[in-house]
Image 1 (cartoon, rainbow, N blue to C red):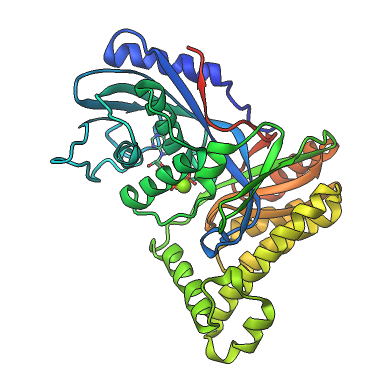
Image 2 (image 1 turned 45 degrees about the vertical axis):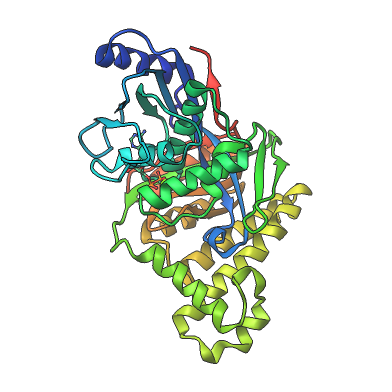
Length: 391
Ligand code: ADP
Ligand code: MG
């Protein structure tokens, strides 16, 4: 059985109860921001390439009210966040800017407050979320973008553009969570539209909505529910290797390089750096091509490209793991499955599978039978980006 995705209204109710208990009285503002699944285009964003995510019906909800206390008081209802689950910090001023600290989860919020263009006089807030934390569906960006939307609502100051908003949230993650992420997660959480995926050109920052409403197909997200904590240097190392390959080829970044360029310079690159570049360059091309294939409803070819993407991430970029490989291999055995791949940064988290709608149940039962771990499934339609909610 696929997991039942909670209604946003029930998240708001749950948060309102907690708000009353913690702060007294009622919150008067509620916002949401979605997590995302990247359908194709992995580890391409920081190479100025293309990514193709869709916003999920899994969301972070923040409810709260403005205060004049000079304090930002926040409680998260996520038991998986690091403790304590309640924090209070002073609103920033030029003499006392915000700094990162413990607990780590509050850094995502502090980072957004620090990068918000308006004056924040203080607030009380409760955060709750249906996006799994650390599952590769971008709970972090959804928390940042929800925070920004919340601040817009309580201060009346609006970002001048959605792009500015997404970039401020990305900056928050860079500076306060120490994660040098690309722009995909914050863009889709800000700009997602129901019934569409979003092709993002990470160089020009232009984004194009691509309709995805065919009821005969479904995207199934399978959470492996494993996360291998590596040294923490894997992501920065991959970024550095991509930059190294580009520099050797005399290019600004791998978006500018072709596979022919790469072959020409092979002898000047270590085998590892060569393979990293092979993935990034081919994945950038594959993503652009895959989107035109999808526009023609050629699901067979699109699915094949998703699977190629997985193999490239597994063999050349080496960011997969046995559990994700097992999930993908199992999915591909099911009639009606067009393609399957790991999604997100890797080393655990989720896979995304394109399947005929009528074959969703057999995909789930086959996976339950075959996968040695305990998977969770989400059958998702492309959903709306961040929004203010009625309360
Ligand atoms: P992902 O974005 O793929 O879910 P990350 O490691 O980038 O994984 O971000 C997960 C982190 O974001 C959590 O460990 C926590 O610090 C923070 N976070 C996300 N959502 C929440 C939430 N609802 N409450 C508290 N912290 C959250
Ligand atoms: Mg994240």
